[in-house]
Length: 167
Image 1 (cartoon, rainbow, N blue to C red):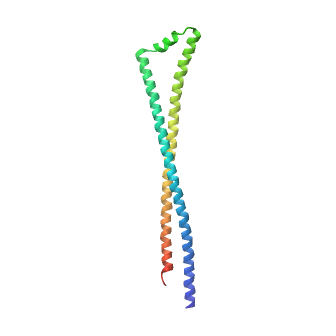
Image 2: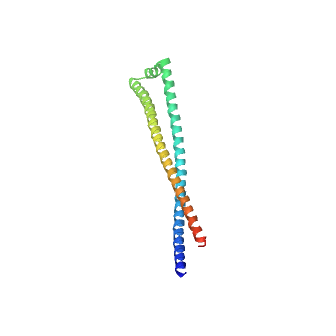
Image 3: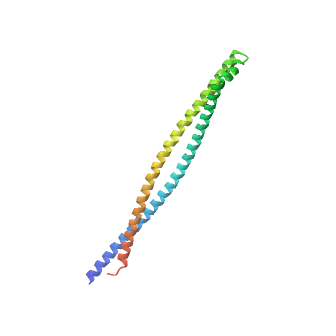
């Protein structure tokens, strides 16, 4: 009888120790789940910000394309007479050269800006794709952590019921 009592006490003690470890693991998993949920919210905010940036850049690209298109149409309809007229109406050769350089710089600057916007748009789109992949990975890890937490809860309940059940 004494042997049986010690054996039972040993099992109870082992079960209590196991229950204590499981409860610590549950706390760790809950903290992990909270951290992943926070990370998901942060990634979602970053994704939304990138989406807004993409929208703004695409709008700017469209505006630049519309500007270029209207300038091309104007040039097609009326020729480059307005530019040529501005250059020809200069009071000196030096002024003519300055106006020609200004028109060239203005045109080059707009084309450069369009190119920069397109490159930036692509970079933001790439960043958004990378962010989406990280978001998916974090969601997967969060599901795993929740699953582990549920398994630990089940084990905790089993050990608690073992301790409470009379032998």
